[in-house]
Structure formats: structure tokens, C-alpha cells
Length: 292
Figure 1 (tube, rainbow, N blue to C red):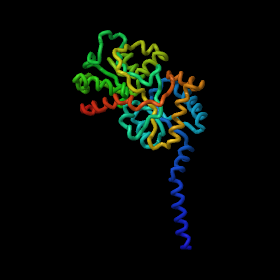
Figure 2: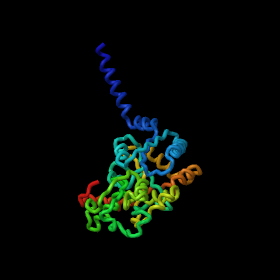
Figure 3: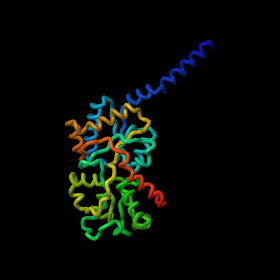
Figure 4: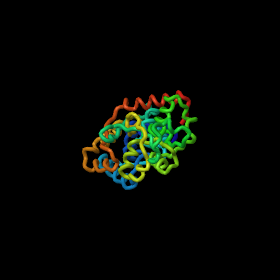
């Protein structure tokens, strides 16, 4: 009776070892498929589009795909770092903050370039405002505290002018999506706002009646487009398979149809250096003592 106990214990240890072996981990990840996080940067009918995109990737990869949507970048980042997600479509700001834990998967191409801008917008009837400095003691709309174009860039622009952002505007608020920044400015709820150029230009196609009530005052230098990233601890073969599925979209008729709905040309591997200017802005913000 007692002599069998060491044997059972040994078998238990072997079982635990097998379950935690790299191959077993890869099999478990494969069984559950891919979990990809998204934020409200998507502007189209999410339910029908995501169902079609899910079906496309499942056919390409032979594995289940789950798109998981959250309202803020912070929520998506937290889920990615905790292992609840395998990949996520982020902004360049949280990407450079978490470069050690994540890596580029693919970068969208918009109008021929893997880049975008931050637009400063005001109501269409405002013909006086010519720069961000003209909005002193006005109401300003930001999109998300973890957005480069919708928060970081305008903050650093003010800092570069020797201005303390926290004392510059009469009031600021977060809308939690770029579309809502455009809406707030169009409806006169805010005197100005900072918005992702890709979002504004896509809205100009899909909802021209909204963007026509705003005016672009200024455009930032080019930044690396908000990237798709993966956890660094994701199995390499799984990461490469997912990357290739994104990169192949532009060469596939069904993939091109989905890209057209996204108002994108395709995806490229991307270069980490494209996000260095955002990293410099993060350092400038931190050095100033401003907080998100």
C-alpha cells in the first residue's frame, strides 16, 4: 500500500512537467486560437465587419479567432500584458511605453504610407484660430490619455512653446474615441480637439456631414501608424503565422475587400524606429511633470 505512494507521486510530477513543457503550452495556445484586442478606433459597423474578418482569418490560419473590444487603450494593454490577449491593435504611445513586453506584429498602410498625423481641429465656423496657442483658455477635447495623436502630441507641442498644459486651457475632457472628438468639436461642445488623421479622413468618406462641421487647423509631422503588436512571450511560430495572415491581405481578393472597408491599403512588417519620435515625446512629457 505504502510502496505505491512514491510511484503515484513520481507519475504526478511527470504529468505536471508535461503540462508545463513548451510543446504543451503551444498546443494549449493553439487550441484556444488567437485573441486580438481592439479599441474604438474602428469606425465601421463592428459586428458585421468583425464577423467577416474573423471568418477570413480562421480560414487563413485554421484556428479560432476572437476579437475582443474595449473602450480604452489602457484596458487593452492591461489585458495583453496579463496574457488575456495574444495580440492587440494599439496606439504608438502605449507601444513605446511597453516595448520591453511587446513587439511589432504588423503596421497598417494608409494612403501608401505606414504613417499618420495628429490633426488639430476646430468648428468649421471658427475662422480665427490658426494654431494651438490660439485656444488659450478655451475648452479642448482629447481622445484618450494613452493616445499619441489625441493627447501626447498636443501636450508636448505646448510644452515646446514653454507653456504648462495643465494651466493653458479653461477646461479639457476625454471623449474616449477619436470620432467623439470630432463630434464634440462639430457640435461646439469643445472649441478645439486633437484627432487621429486616419480617423478624420475615414469619417470624411463615411460621415462627411460630421467632418464638414470641423476645420483642420494644423497637422503634425508623420508618426508610425498605430501598430498591431503581440506579447513577447507568445509562441514564435504562432506570432509568425498571424503576422503572415495580416501581410497577405492586400494580395488576396477577400482580404482587399476587408481592407477597403477599413480604408487601408494593407499591412507591412513595420520598423521599430518609426516610433522613436513618439518615445521622445513621452520623455518630454515625463520631464515636464505633466501626468496623464
